[in-house]
Length: 256
Image (cartoon, rainbow, N blue to C red; front, side, top):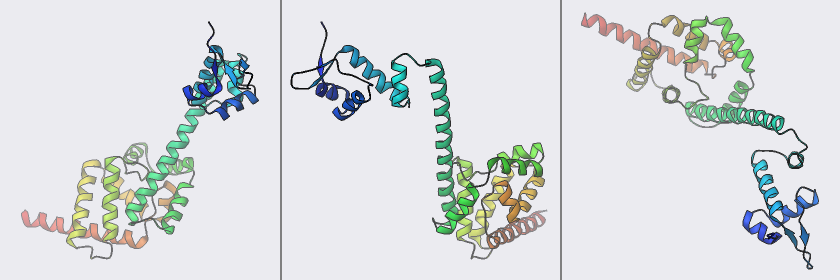
């Protein structure tokens, strides 16, 4: 016995609007088996299965014209799935890039103490740099072993605990940049930065010195994709580190 169901019941059972079902009929994608005397469309089991296929393929991201060809068995399913898989992979890549950009903007906001037009302009400039160009410039500056160390640097576009702590420390230091470099609050942050650097880059002082030299150069920082920091703030950081090292050396001498 063939089960027949009206368009309104199909809509209730599937959650697909009557308007959509009528549109599918209009483009020849899903035709009703018949119509009642009152003009109501009626569907059978075959049509309901076809509708399930349409819903499934739409969920995979296929367009209605592609679905129509697939359902009519005049399309190469294998090639279509490969094509769709490539499309999804590309969309994932775009979404990941969007996610990284949003994270980067949030993290930059943490450093700057809020979202401002100046910050947005900074980040737009940073984001517009070609990834391949940045990578090529890095390879000119760093040896292969140094590139491995470079990859460990905190990344503004990530939310891993290490990057977030560095960003947080930098943001706290930015808020204190009007203080004296030898202020306890400033030195507390510098001490934590030095502790992290010693753990993460122990024995690689030459690399850290090279990175700091690059960081102080607006041009080089921009070329390798570092987040831009004002010259005044960089000078403050350098003074604070100098105070830290001086006190550390003095303490070492007093204990020897």
